[in-house]
Length: 202
Image (cartoon, rainbow, N blue to C red; front, side, top):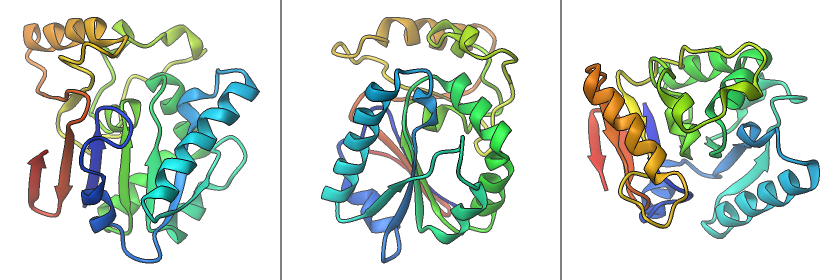
């Protein structure tokens, strides 16, 4: 299994992502965590993600879970999952059936899973606690189970004064401490890199 889990955007070590992705580097960019944004704003955000990944030498293209077949993920070398609202993202994964596709592909080590903020968070066993920082009311019937790819939660943006959610995620981390939920803290710039048996926080 190959995971590149960033707190914010590409993080400080994008070269580690590039090193894990096999040529030609076709990358499915999943931006459904921002589906509740106005269409024009969402389009600008998607274009920014495509631009950053192209600059790394990857070959990104959007895969929109609202309209595209998630089975197409099997034809990519990597997927990049943008941050946003984790409950909106989880809902899109369920509705499209991409949740099972992603779990299956990662189990076969058939692609790299990369992304930031909500992208890593959705891999946890549960999304409980993240309602502190993400608006759960944006989803009519929220799903509280994560994909279960990780055996712990991810708490991004900790100790990141420039990020607007850093105080909210401190409350998430405090809750996890209280109820003994294991979690990986990430500050903006940090990345958790998992490559087979290797696990590094960089």
